[in-house]
Image: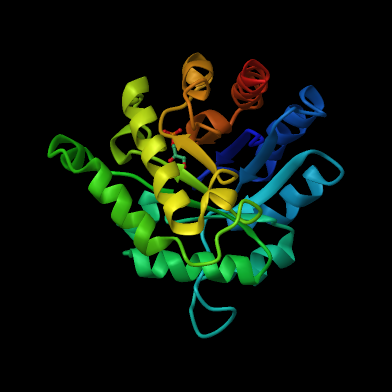
Length: 254
Ligand code: 13P
């Protein structure tokens, strides 16, 4: 039984005052029946970790450098995230791949760096709209998985997030059948890669315009083990409603 996982990705949003939303989330959901994490800008990690101390909410970063330390102005290593209080990190988000030229090979090295620092990695894959229109979705996702998931993946240190690029921040989502197809494919690829004993335990999250209004339907789809949520993670009420949907979906599957 895979425990549902709801992870917020605040992207480049959030000042100190916004930690009030996290405190409100914790107050409203002190003991969620799913895992909850918030991946914040690096500037907030330390304060977020303080706000989440003794709570069920885990703290994550949004990317990490491939090296532990070095002459890389402006970059942040996985060890630094861990030192600031993070337990998690997102790697391979499409915005990083597009804006910072992060290739599959770089993402694989970032993921390994995250593991070396003791962080849990959420590794993102997903096709562009042109790739979907060309019927290449599974090819693209398969190649991303093959080349960006390093050897050594286990359920204790990796989740995969399927984030169709065209669904991110657009209010558009794939159909339930389209989500089910890709998640089933990812499950099969991971099982083939590491064996079903580990592969069946790895959580596969959906990301892209997930919000309170559609979370229950998406979380009910087979092999959807949670969500990676951007815009709707910024407000306690919205993220809390998605947590409740995840709790209900987990209950329905028992
Ligand atoms: P939105 O939920 O804002 O579409 O963002 C999804 C995302 O990119 C999460 O990583």
